[in-house]
Amino acid sequence: MDTDDLPVVLPSSTTSGLSLALHPLPILNISEHLTRRKLQTDSNSPFVLGALLGTQNGREVEIVNSFELAVEESDADKVDHGFFIIRRDQYKQVFPSLEFIGWYTVAPQPTARHIKFHEQFTAYSSTPLLLILQPSSPSTASTSDVTAQALPFKAYEPTTEIRDRKTRSVFIEASYSVETGEAERIAVDWTAKGGGGETSLESHLQSQRAAVKMLHDRIILLVQYVTDVLAGQEPIDHGTLRSLSALIASLPASENPAFRTEFETEYEDVQLTALLSTLTKSANTLNDFVDKHAVLTSGGRDERGGGSGGPRRRGMSGRGGPMGGSEAWERFH
Image 1 (cartoon, rainbow, N blue to C red):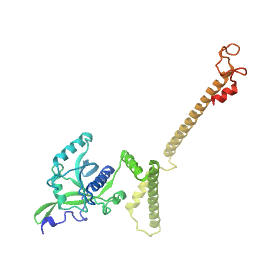
Image 2: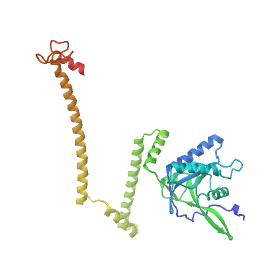
Image 3: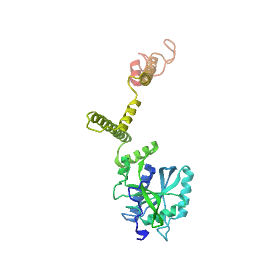
Image 4: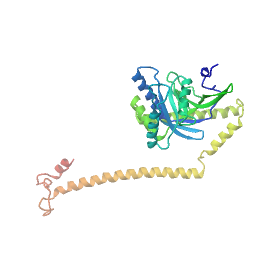
């Protein structure tokens, strides 16, 4: 069999062992790139090619950003290296910590054509990763992250296969997780607000509710497991019980004096802050009342003298002036 006819992805039983974290920004960039190409080419499956930027520390890789790439006009299977180098250097000036770590495209699965692109990118990275967007089918990536399972993305790590005393480049599917920072969560929240009409408060409360619900479900699961073990309905797993015991021991007990002291200190600080806020508002209200009282009482003085001879403001005379005290109060308000 010709090596070009062999599958370029190793079986799922082969694991890469790569710790890969995917950030929301490249996900949005790739999706926007595909949508724009569909409109420009009037095609449901346009060719999309781009570079991935991120950081790598040993076997831990983070995909943080991305940018689009071009191909040669004379050969659609050849990367425009001049354009790639210019764009990479421009991003390097703005994000000096990010390196080229791979490339992305849109396809149902890797093919021999992707191997050709991979070999072109090895000049810039020894093991460039491949991220494929599969819009026609949901992702079945073998990862424990719920968000990643719902995304139509698959990540692949290149490797070398020896078959019939010949070596060839192939891909291994790598599991990944979606990781977000504070700034990214704000950006994604604004994006979701523009598309779905939800406010940031609603999105935040929904996220908090989902997190509390997940915690509650897991606590119920642990309680049910311990109950079944005590009833003899489940086998005893000493490793799980030790982990559960360590988790309980790490929780602050209500009868712990150190916990009670810290809790009371925090509670008193909150109450003191609330009291200071109330006092500030009361002082502001009293100050406004004093100013109004001073304006009102000044209406009993004559313009030429106070009392019998003091100064009196125009329009603020007493009973015989053009404006009495009650009239001054009404005009003030």
